Image (cartoon, rainbow, N blue to C red; front, side, top):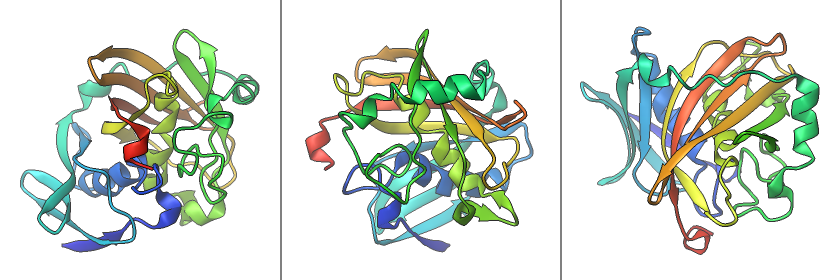
Length: 240
């Protein structure tokens, strides 16, 4: 068992952890045990608490993150074929940069201090996923040095970067949502300061659930990571 803590910097809503970051804490732990045939699928069971020691533990069924007796999140292995349709066709970096000007979160963000895409979180990733048509978003990302281990960006932050480009394919003003499930595969890690391109794609919805995908590319157009998400419609006031 390992104790982990979600610091205030890594929040999503004001009072809980960013879904992609917390999913990364659990998912990267499970990924280290897998052989490539399977990928981690993480379900967030409750708003992840901030500034508390949480228990991160592994067993035969997968990995669990708990707060005392409460299950915060858990990861299980699923067949890698689940991500077969997660790769979004790339766009040039200049097109992704242009899309950032239309990022809706600059005007009316439900969670403005989000670690990944919140314009008010100066210690965050500062992603600005803007629409590029056909239910897709795009933005650029130059990861900072404090996100790196051994000169390359830690996988944990790639999980986080895969989060919000999918979320902003949803009308988050009319359908405010939080991450419920994230399934991801990390293929490679970028260098510090490398200009990456993040893409999101809307896949559909069912009741309160919305389904999306995201892909992260390196500066040479190679896939770094892929993901699929399930989002749950919520009342933002309950989280902020």
